[in-house]
Image (cartoon, rainbow, N blue to C red; front, side):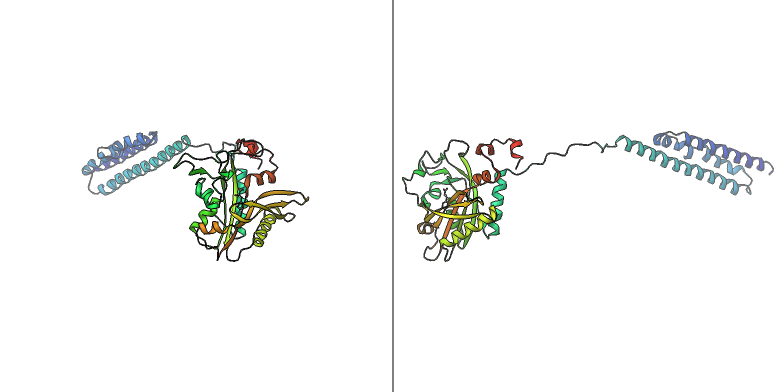
Amino acid sequence: MSAGVPDAVALAADARSCTEAALAAIADAADVAALAAVRPELLGKGSPLSGLRRRLGSLAPAARPAAGRALSEALAAVEARYTERLDELRAAERRAQLEAERLDLTELHEPPPVGRLHVITQTQRRLEDVFCAMGYTVAEGPEIETEWHNFGALNFPPGHPARDMYDTLYVDHGSPGSTLLRTHTSPVQVRVMQTRPPPLYVVAPGRCYRQDTADATHMPVFHQIEGLVVDEGITLGDLAGAIETFTTAYFGPGFTSRLRPSYFPFTEPSAEFDVQRPDGTWLELGGSGMVHPSVLEVCGVDPERWSGFAFGFGIDRLAMLRYGIDDLRDLWTNDVSFLEQF
Ligand code: PHE
């Protein structure tokens, strides 16, 4: 059995050199793919280290367990080193990939220009806010109207100058003269009364159209806001009070208002209303009056039970006064450097 001893020594020496070669090959692998490629030669069934197992049988039986354990430990050491190296190489590849895909987030850009609402829209919204605070709700009506809503229901007699082709823009729709671009927001009074039962506390802002030649104070397209109140026992005093409340709420405490007799076919009595500035000067603002009983009636509201007032004025004019704009046309040219002042 003396031959067994040198055999065991030789086996141990071979195992050491196989292990060293395997560890060197693992260290040499430059990337994950190269490492994976050498795995069968290092750890597979045909690897030199596994091959050494076949020589265990030729050892003295007493030497086999120790030699077998030593071979197993060598394989385990190679396997452990392999896994460690694989982790290292994977981490390195991941780092390289992240570096390659890195975004430079430090680049500075000007913030995008933030827009704003047009000065007319701002004015309209402020007016809505003031009237909402007074208990009104906001209503809307179409800009393309029937002749009946714009004129007929509002008591305009057939030959009234406002119905004239020279003032009103008619739309080529339906029978001739039946459809138009609304000349004021008053038709919204009719639509509201037709669709909702009183009490009504409503404002209706929106675009209106008249055949005007554009100049500093006229445009064929302009904006109005209509007010309509219908309730039991409403009087001219309520109209005056509403105008006064609005005046101080919108313009400020130094301002006051007055009503002047006037005429509109759909109100009786009718009044123009003016606002007085703190310096004492007067400013004509719009039209108003008690809703005519025949308008209530045609809209299905019983004039024996209900009464009401209405008013209407130009939003563009109000914006011009508030912001000191002296040419209406500037509101339509969409010159950003002009509009961004407001
Ligand atoms: N609609 C009238 C105009 O455009 C103004 C008005 C509104 C008058 C409501 C009385 C009542 O001139």
